[in-house]
Length: 250
Ligand code: ADE
Image (tube, rainbow, N blue to C red; front, side, top):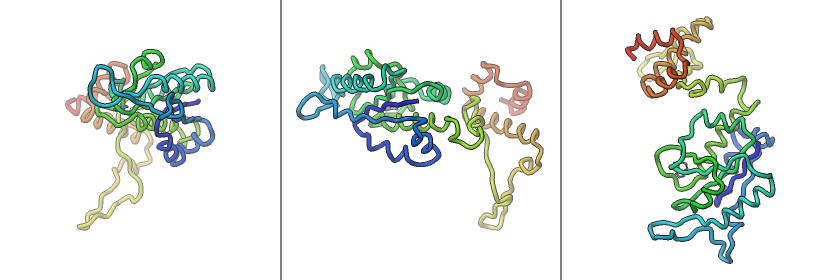
């Protein structure tokens, strides 16, 4: 898959594309990321990419013409892109279901806005998806683009060991339960020892799976009851799940 990122700050991307478990996906080209410096498409001698909004008001607007030129260059290079994403707090909230859609698609153009936003005519003509990270305002779309790239890259084959993302939080619509590793008893100041839950040491895979499911149900019911409602509506809760939840009084 191929992502073309249109940005005023391409240098923000390199550190994230060359580190950690996702590095392999980016370096092998499995997730091929091309960076386009928007300023290279400015149409005046000052390389301006922003100007004051018509009608007045605070801040600056990203100019339509450099964005149009950048999008034309991307299209000339790769053909019509399958999707054009604009990152904005006004967009649909990014979630794992949307990440999975992008992970299974041939890529997209990622438009990273700065300032107050981009000229609406560019959005109307080209943008297929508006995506938000959450209900807060970032100074630009670059961090949001990196979040999407990271979440997509880790789902690519061979990036994670075994199919561990099948157990990720949200991959089945619930939050994951807790994890434990060595030592079996953690000595803490004051002389106490904190053990690992006994069931995890039992070697009984059925009991462990049920315990993990119940932890996941409990943490989701407490922190994100909306996800329980959605899982129930989608028929993703078993009779055992429902019994467990009603035992919690939820
Ligand atoms: N750009 C500015 N704020 C944003 C947000 N919350 N999510 C995505 N892109 C943004």
